[in-house]
Image (cartoon, rainbow, N blue to C red; front, side):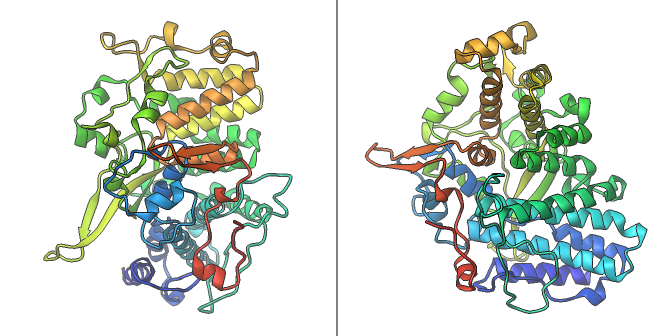
Length: 491
């Protein structure tokens, strides 16, 4: 326990202080990492303890201007919506997330170094696998956030992010961004090496660790970003295969419809929710702020996504709450407030984040199949998704396959043309936009598909435009990183 406490302390020094080091790492305690259990304990910190949703969500087209909001002075809400560099290092900011990712990477690297020092014995393989996959995940999130989206035509020249594979031996080591292509090569290398080493049986609570299921879900997402669609399909099949239908969020089930507010709020991020494949606890104000943010989900967005005619012809039965149109929301995040001691009135708010879900996996799988022109298989997956999300009407609270299911004719007629591949992609992206409101995944699709976004001020006098080629699709590196000599993102 001593090593875990010291490392957590080391991470906390950065998160809740004004530390100005580039890549903060825990103390060099490798001599204490001398057993399986100690390394396993260390790996619980190899997942980013930072929340990307607040700036991903508000930068996307799932956010508008409500005109009022309890967080009108919160620049972590204002700046991403206006496509300005976020001048904050507080929790829920890009800078905070940068360091959370590199702290997780540091933990993974310390674990890998310790395993190597212990002779790389076979019994340590499951720990090595988790460390490699966790390292790959944190680097992919960093690349997604702070570098250009992977484009095979330009990846060899586009600046990436530092891919750190060794524990730091000096306080301020000089790092290079290298290229997006290099970063993706390193991520893929870690995935390929790490996945076969995982052993689900060693986890007491599997959903807090990379299992073979969640690691394959991560691989499917990674290859979707890379555009390697055969591997998207391969890893989706390895993750859940035909069992996926029993893991989709049952939004239209009687049990879910009848849940009370706080039960729904807890269920979305619970280990008991079968859709959640990987969950991470992180310090964050998101659970209390996303409802009342000035820049966020508006009644206009609600109507366009959930009430306007849709391709299923059914009624989406997602559970919205809100006394006024400025606070309309789905209860998805229940805050856990941890006081500094039993007598304190102050502490740190935490949210549980579903990093990977079966719903995202299914829709990524369907997109991979579509890109491979395996249209019927993609449509079958989409019908599985629909069967958990829609009802006929307020009197018939159930899905009716003959009415709601998609087919080629229905899809093409809805969009008014015969380009089935593009029509399926539009359908998949809309389903994802709907399913993951308040969860940040829409931004990932905005990046991958170069979707333009325009934010209008409440009075309609100002607009903030994100073009497909805009450099503002990359969040800016932390100030101290730039001062250390790392090339900033262009503006």
